[in-house]
Length: 229
Image 1 (spheres, rainbow, N blue to C red):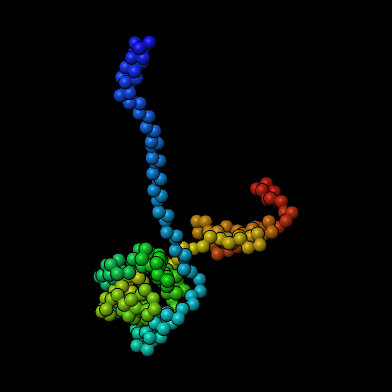
Image 2: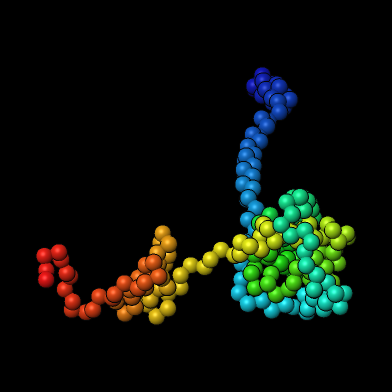
């Protein structure tokens, strides 16, 4: 009996120094992949400036000041001068294109953030609203209340810029609008210099060829052939 108790105590004493096995550490989940970087959305295209022009209060004020200074009656002394046009192009690209755009349509990157949108030099009605002298005065003095400052201080340089605008942009105008359907009929379309006839009520109007109108086919008329008399 004593021997059994001794062996029991010995086994307990030997087993007391053993440490329980450590619990397994939980495996951490892999971090989620980063979200793909979205490409910036392109800036909206600038609205085409076309049709009748009504100057706002800032433009009216500038026109009045140009007239008071006698600028509205001046003519361009550098019109058609190749050297002046080249110099004006260099000034335009350096000082004006960021707002008025490379093509002069008022769609420059810097101009998109302005509350008063830059003028389009291809807006025919707006271009024709003022004299060349008034335009040159504005290039020199700007339009108060807008982002248009007087970027060209000397009058000779201002004439060069306006000469470039006249030769590069003003003579080209805005892109022509697509034909408009009115009451089911479309305006004639010019094909190869000849206008295709418009369809009105299912009957084609005669086409104009060489300035003379071809006779229209009458309802019920049969087609004439070379063998008919």
